[in-house]
Length: 159
Image (cartoon, rainbow, N blue to C red; front, side):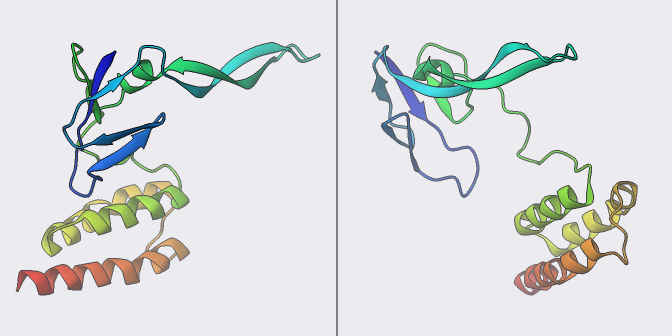
């Protein structure tokens, strides 16, 4: 048996979660049997095309549950060092206009100060231009009402 503990990382994370048929509560260790497994899709090489290119396919394989959880920063495995987090929760820098739409909507919703929101919008002008999100384009027209709504909501809360 291995003891595994669920540890939420950020505000808004659920206090309970389920994985691999086990229910986890914030900070309460759960005994996981050593033979507990989950199915994971893994890439397997299946040959070559007539042109010589490699061919792959996804194959479901049983993987020990503890092996899956030990790399997840939301879980602590007794006797193992906690995995490192990728960063403070900030998404990757977008590379396309469509990526930017989701990226911007995410940071609009996570912003807690109207001044910081406005400064970030201004600071990202170069990024937007570089990836093709122009101030007079469709993406900015889509984002503007959300940006302005969040800005006014935060400004009103600060008053």
